Image (cartoon, rainbow, N blue to C red; front, top):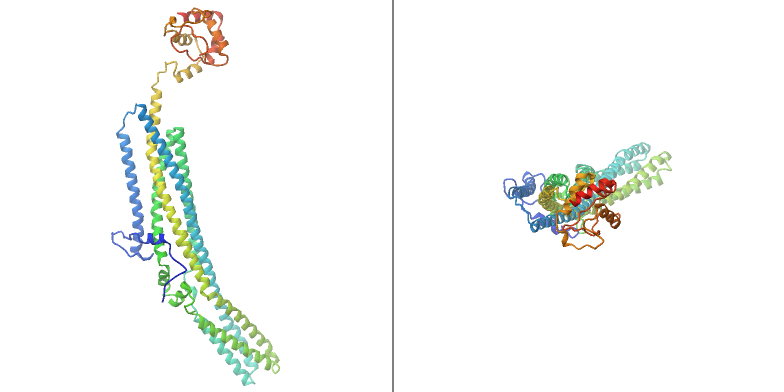
Length: 536
């Protein structure tokens, strides 16, 4: 038999995956033929999953070495250039990880959708094929039932009615022979009930695919959320958020490698089937259905003979002969035996119904319907399904790379945040130009001692002779006059750099609104006392 096909050609990526080395767990090469029930073939798929597990182990080992070096080989980065370089490196690493993660999620969504479309096309074709085969069985069973029970009952009655006429009885016997011939031809048709239940297989496949699709959807959303939250933690410099995302990043990294192993095994196994699907189906059905029938449906060529043609032809001829005999009895026997008209009419209706069933059976047994379902299933599995699995493999690889970079960047960012907080804590709180000191001053309303210390700081530096203020501004002016000028010139602005300086060599301090309000609320004696302390 010729096995050349022009209506189905396996895609190139199935041949590429089919050529992957097939090695069992004892490191022995195994034939690439798709044998899902063979133990050695199952071990080859497990071996491919173990390769992904080995990649996960190497990835975690590399991360452990990197984190160990980062913790054990600390260097004090006190120079600004090194700090800027490290900060820039962390920033660009986070940006790259975020972009790769977003790209991986996009690829994953597309691959998940493609795989789902392929499996849906497979289940749809299985349902159609099951409907066709079920229709054949119903037609055969209905026709045989009508011939065995209905026709036999009517012929028995007519035999009693036509007992006096030997020629009519002989005609009835001939019709019984034709009915037996039809039953024999119907029994020669294959029983499709012996095949596996395609509807049950489609239901199970659809159920598994639904949970697979939902699982990958949750994984994609989880990856995207972890990536975004990690970027948020870097932006807000939140150490607890980064630590939490680091833990989830490790779990997601493990999940990505695990999904990669499952995807590779599924893609290679499906590709082994797609390279030679006809051979696998003929081997599985050789003990259930004749090989010529399976070959007829798999290839559906005009040059192939129809294995049902002879049975259907005998069926048609027998029905035609019986209809001719019934027409003769209605014409010649009914005038002599009026009571026979009812049974003859019932037989005629039964033959007409059997002829309609014959036409339906001929259409259902034609190879074009089942062959179209078969090709649609192959297209769905081998094109959309395997292509979607390849995109999911790419998603897993990109996700593992993105989370690896993220896990490398988060500890460095955590260190930089810790160093920045430590440097911030080392600032002298007595320095009046320290922002934290200003906040402390603003939250503690000025007392006499605080005001004296703050104001005396500005008069303790510089030489008064180094400045030449205008004549109307004298250096020994009362402090109240100076503060009044500050209020007039400064207005609502809490800083008073625009006020002429009174013999100062240091920059003016920044007066908070609380200090100004405290001073304005002083009595005249308190202001005079404050001015004496200031001049001292």
